[in-house]
Length: 310
Image (cartoon, rainbow, N blue to C red; front, top):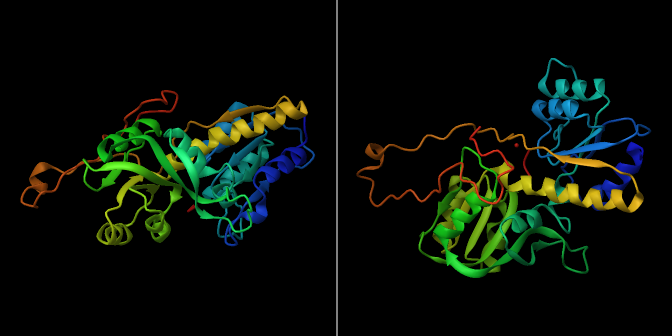
């Protein structure tokens, strides 16, 4: 079995830490470099539920997308919730490694996994990494559908293919409009509207869309918007990342066992729809949001309705 230092070296080769944004906090949070690794758990959020899951599983390493200490800290006291996570991991000999914006712009990266979950054909990155001469790395992905479909039908596909959350999928635009070209960006993506418009996309799927950027995007162009839960847009990466480590393990004869956390760590736990009486008299307001909890090709992901920016 490999030492933790060997596994971390492999992870750093897949997602070099120097490719992370300067403000980011990637890398190993805790763990003994000489400790043996047999099981690895991939998850989106380094929260207590995931730490407890790792202990129950007998994992030696947890790899998360979101950082535990994005803005630094002066304490790891167990009286704080983040300190309690650290204490749980260290007391049970579990290491924690973070792969964040270095995975966002990787090839393949977070947005590749999102596009793959939706059966979209990728034509290139939305914001290419200038250091990549092959032009494959970067933020977001420009994609095409194999066959055009209505915005409503595409929204239903997104709701069916991504793991279910209380939010479901919010949609802005005419449900009957035809969608051919789609830009996807896992995580918070409303800072990329100018790039999406330049790409000439029919629709943009991302997370954490705020009122003003979304409203302005609608006014400036006929761009359709699909807003999914942050956690849901990044969860497909855990499957992709585990498969990448599996390939390395097989090549080196490490016999690692990789696992994917199916614990829903999206912070929103319920969804209350507006009552018809509140919507009456408000013009032609139409609820085009597919029902939360829709399930399709991912029956293995929890479908009951039960987080750091990227």
